Length: 162
Image (cartoon, rainbow, N blue to C red; front, side):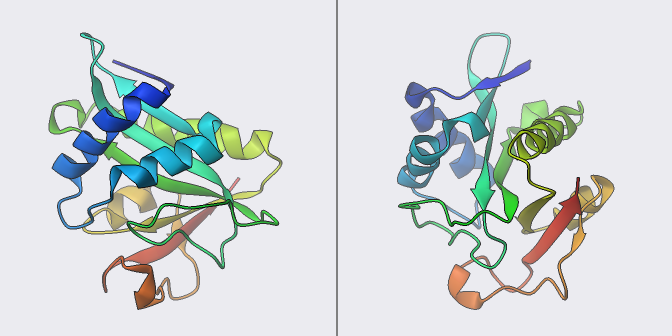
């Protein structure tokens, strides 16, 4: 398995992985297409040995005070940039436990550094908080989000300095 840059033709497969992994946080394929269109260098897929998409990573520069809204395609990146957003990371069940999520985090850190940004921000949902803490992320303030962002009451904003 290997991470590679996403291509436009991967968007449908990315949406399929998202549908299987993020049952409580569905996103329309248009969300992934918009992220790819706005910042393709932040979009990657995990390709299995047969060349199938088995996971994905979507990330982009942004503003901490304007996190993406769940299931709403972005029309522009929030500027001026003050952080790098790890927008979404999902791995199919067969790929977990191999260190591939940690590899994706390193991709994000490298991209943020290349953009000259000093922190990565994300919104942790479901039971992923512990994973993100192990990756060096911590709460931003109390971590609470505006409910209008659509992530649910357990979601928290986390950040990691670079």
